[in-house]
Length: 191
Length: 242
View 1 (spheres, each protein chain N blue to C red):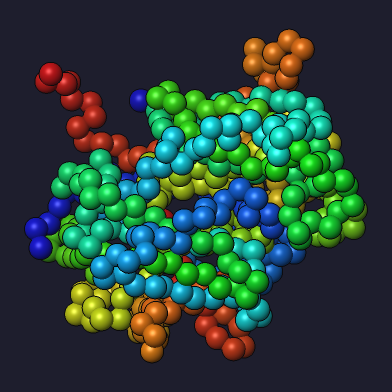
View 2: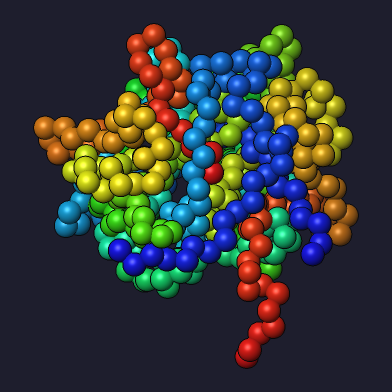
């Protein structure tokens, strides 16, 4: 085997990402009017609790049946037309949102199963590398309790990764880049 | 639930390949880095898959940043090309590459950019291309200018083009910056120098490419982007049956 090539390093997305990255349909993982659609929204804040107005949040997820339109899914790819991806630049108040549907439970090794979740990437000026976190769903208590990723976290961290239902049906998921006097930071993952 | 045999995951990059989240020289990292250690996320289905965006996200003309708003941008016309590869040298075909940059005077078309270099009415600064079957990409643009910022006294960003690449999986997602050879501003730039390994740092610098330079038209620069390679596939060395 030949010597592997070294990866290109990460660099910050910088303050001007809105020139190149936002898409008009970015937050629409599913089109408006999709059955079962849910709005996921939150605020991106820094270690002082201040909003991050120049960030970008991306999500990636399985479809409601727990399948991916991707050839590396060992169960075989499906072509459900499900995009699975969302992208939203934060607004002046650090806010972001997505319209999506809850993904299915995912099989993994042994008799384990991953609870429905979204993988999340966070980019911003002042971040030299993305941060990765996950959104879990509040109405999946049993699946969440058995999830192999959540199981390794403490109760406070599990709570921070579980979206909070709001009276209007929105699922709230705030992302805090750094702990501060007024709150803990979001648990982040190395992938 | 029926268990699955997960395909091989992606190799971790050697230490020093990527910048730390907390880098004293770059002031904006101070309040934007986590203080707790990252949890390890094993590569399972969501991490092994990812959005496979390609050509369907690219509009005609988005590979040429020099023509925008009905006119021709001012500056040194350049062609930037290269390949998107994985760590084993395999091309990453049909993957979306998004770029954005300052104009020839170092000014971004953005309300937050107050640096008093003129905006160019014919330069937007954003472009998109998709890689071909061999992982190659190519776009035409203007060589961006350097520009000052407030990080430290007399701080100037070396000329650079921002790149966003999806690759084949969530795990391969990369946002980075391409630099130009022999830039005299490297020594004082904390963003460039935040990459600990000097060899990794050098991989962010494009090469002048005379073969891609077009007579009386544009200078050529070549830059390959390498995304993480995969752990060894057990079946890889077996001969094909068909």
